[in-house]
Length: 246
Image (cartoon, rainbow, N blue to C red):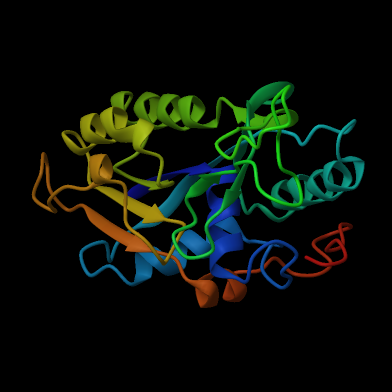
């Protein structure tokens, strides 16, 4: 069974960061995509004859102007993926830097939901008469960095391969509900495995379903810290060395 693998690189990265200790955590970023997916497939009872036929990694290059060190580290990693055969194709979207305006907010440590900041000491807003305005809000401009295009590229490669019979089964690595339609369409034609990059929380409702939907043989899987840490590229990977802190 020829399996096509379609990876949303940023969705996978943020999932790994959550699983492995947060921003700045080390020991997991030098990720071997092919090994990671192969290990997940091996745990599924119904795909015993699966072989990874095509691994497509969808990402966008980090903006060198706003984060030159991350850009350099990512460049090494992308070259290592190709040099080792961990992926067969890298599809690039865009990494966009914009200035946006919004309400000042903090993150609730328990729920992780935004809490809008209001006027309070030591920063108490007063009106023209010197009266306190406790319900005042703060508008701020901030740098907004956004990856664009990976979800569309995942969907496009998935459907192109399924509709041209280039693969007999598919694995999608993402928890982005925007992929609901292409995944649902693919399930009508081939078995589909969905790998959620986050072990905690839920799989997006629009991505859920039943193993018997469409042609059947579908499965769902969640990654954890052990899965990330055990699927690492060799170091060095050809002529490419794992960046410091990875």
